[in-house]
Structures are given as structure tokens and as C-alpha cells.
Length: 167
Ligand SMILES: [Zn+2]
Image (cartoon, rainbow, N blue to C red; front, side):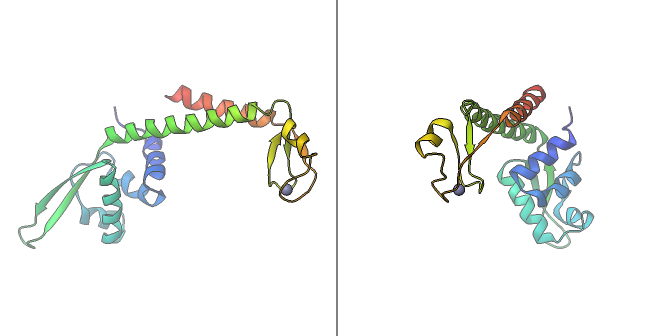
């Protein structure tokens, strides 16, 4: 099964940075493309292309061959994406994201008794803690306001569900 385009671009953005997306999308489905052809086709300078290829290779997201150019006498590298590895990295990133979201959700749910927040956004805390501080922000001294986090909780739950359903 071929890798979906959004899996490819999301993984690239997170693992390598947004500047690598164009190159990765260009290489998708191709095999053994020379570094110079890549640079030419995506209209990018060769040193920039090499930098991205180096980052790809570091994470085993690509494979390459080196061949000596008979006429010029130097080595040229030929590149292929490791699409299987992209899927693995994507799954790892999703797993990490899921953990972070679940952590966040747990924290939000601990505020069920009431969440208090500084109008300057210095701090947020539960009811007990806010009471200890007489509902005053320890950073700026303003009065803490109660906040309803039901929507935040619902939002986190739907994001978690979305990831779990796509896994
Ligand atoms: Zn404050």
C-alpha cells in the first residue's frame, strides 16, 4: 500500500521541518533520483537539497546509492524515499501526540471542582490552591477568575478519538 500524501507531509513537517516537504513530495513514488535532478526539478540550490537529504538519511527516511560519474569523475548520489519508515515514524509521532493529549485531558479533568485563571494568564490552578492564595495571582496580584473548561475537555476528547480511530 502506498503512503497517503497527508501522512507523508505531516511526518516530514514534524520530523524534518516544513522546508523538506516539497522535496519529499517530489521524491514520493520515484526511485534512484540523482541529487542534481532533484535540485533542478524542485528549483532549489544543491547545497540546500543536500542538507535536506542529509536530514532524511539521518532518520532512515531515505536510502541512496553513490555512483561515480564517468565523464565528470565525481560521485553523485541517487535517492529513494523509505516509505515504510515514514509510516513507522508517523505511527510513533501519533503515539507521542496521543500521550500528550491524554496527559492534558487528565490535568483538565483534575480541575473539575473549578479552574481558576489569572486575567493576565500568568497562572491557572484548582479551587483548593486558589483558595490557599485567597484567589490572588501569585505573579501579578490580580484576582483569579473561575473558568469553565468543559469545552477544552470536549475538544481534547475529540482530538484523542480522531487519532485513535485513524490508528
Ligand atoms: Zn497574574
